[in-house]
Amino acid sequence: MLLGLNLRPQASDHMDRRSQWVLWVALIQLFLNLSDAMLSGRKLTATSSNTHSDFISIDCGASDEYTDHQTGISYKTDRGFVETGSNSMVAPDERYNVYYPYFGRQLQTLRSFPEGRRNCYTLKPKQGKNQSYLIRAFFSYGNYDGKNQTPSFDLYLGVNYWTNVCPINKNSHFVEIVHTPTTDTIHVCLVKSGKGIPFISTLELRPLSNSIYATPSPSQSLLDFRARIDVGYVSNTTSLQIR
View 1 (tube, helix red, strand yellow):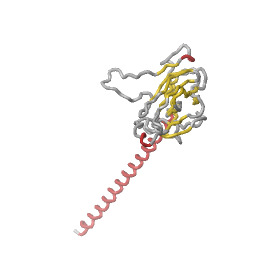
View 2 (view 1 turned 135 degrees about the horizontal axis):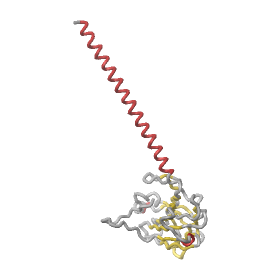
View 3 (view 1 turned 180 degrees about the vertical axis):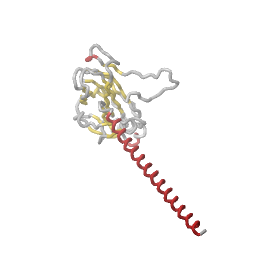
View 4 (view 1 turned 90 degrees about the vertical axis):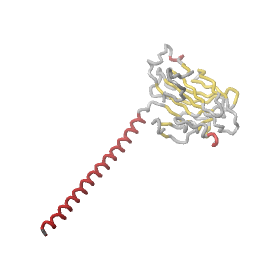
């Protein structure tokens, strides 16, 4: 009887140690799996950002570069793209009005051009000339100068007139164009037209397949954006599909 009583506690202690060992092994394996998932996530993030290496995305007026966490697109500052102008932020009481899920940070800052009649950004896409590009510009006034007077000015691609820009005070305004340049450099120019100081919030360039918008003469291929229609949908949408 005494022998039997002594054996039961020893067997119980052995089982406890075995259970603890199994638990530790399971916890270690879980930790390793979580670490691997985190590292994989970091690799995935880095890979996804690299897939946009042929994009040009400029957050005009921004003080530093960053990657948009929702799109994975990296935005650069104006440095290296334009040599004139000055950076500003929209008025504090207007920052909520210009916030949108996809474009909020880009619309908080801007670059204005009080000096000179014509000021240009210089874009050098990797694909070079004779390639179709979507070029998109955003303008969010946000009463950055405290005047409550939105300006009106012209936008050019090199020497070619693009459009007139006249944003509404409390709303952002954007324009798009498809362009096939004959040179490796694209100049996007803001030109004074008599009312106020030109400014810009965001400038983006996206390469397109030449088969989508084939044009017989690249130098004449300026396809201006007029409307984007989601055919068959039951309600309007304000999201932009090309990022």
